Length: 424
Image 1 (cartoon, rainbow, N blue to C red):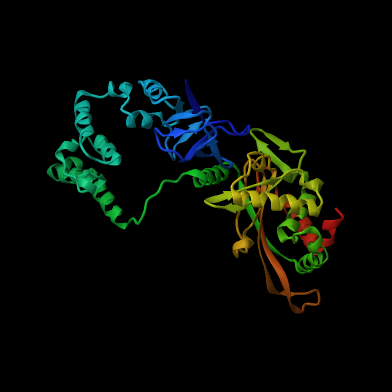
Image 2: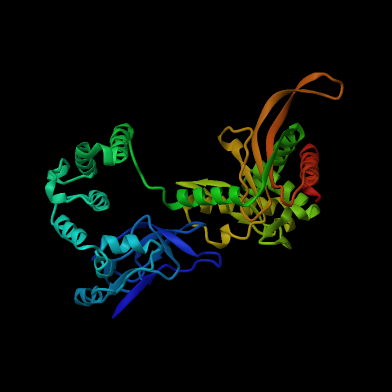
């Protein structure tokens, strides 16, 4: 019996995943329930267990993206069964980059499409000691690796050797391939300046994709301002002096900010909306996400129905999500369904930012560090007060300046009158 290990569907929004890391070696024996690999979805990293006991053939490659349902490994009861399963056209993963898979595995289908000359070169190159990248570059340039000498470890042909061969060949026909020679030279010179190369993958690739997609999707505008929060600072101090020992934890500024925004979104529901295709969708629930820095990147856990929670309940749920986020055990549900997002850059000393909207939401609130700064009071006297820098990025397709201003006025009012956090 041979079992297929497929990319599972984790959450309704999941379409694909990137293989972060295999925890076992190809061909090794594993037990049912043993962790085989880690995958990175658009939301979070998951560990995938073996469905059976047996021997593993790895098909999926680290750093590559696969659709849900793609076969990334097979587990056989015996090594003999595994070998029979590996006959041509068996166990081919449904990888998005099928061309790369077939190329690296010398598929018969691709081989038949090559010209006789290309086939001869590839047959020779397979017998030569060369890195996979050098082979790939040589194939693209039509260079016969058997004519080259390697300068890599153990005499292996490396990328530099292939580029050097192309550069030397170009000198004999400068008029025809002057441009190609220049490009080759530039590549060689660039390599001398590079300290390290690494693929953009996992959570960093997900963040990069989402950020670019967000900017290309909506018309984003950012309002920047600051608010005096001296009363809020005092309020928090008094609250913790009275309640910290009873609660078992201290109330943080993040707890207060989340409570304030939950009140505003209930009063200003247009800010708790999304634009989906040609429709404006106003959500029933207020589900507030907050940016959380974790190892390797950033995630956005979501507090569901936050407008129905007390300050104490918000603090408890927030602390739980942060703890599980740092431990890497957030679920897809923890990271989905958000209708508005807060990001606090004050934790690393930031004061003002221009945050990018978490699609398909229509706004994100960025909060900075609270600083003691000179202010002018109502008597036109200069005093020292506590100020916080903030920024509201909103989708101008739906939110106009007046609506954004109303949100900011409500937020400033609560910050200057923090006892409202206990009665609303």
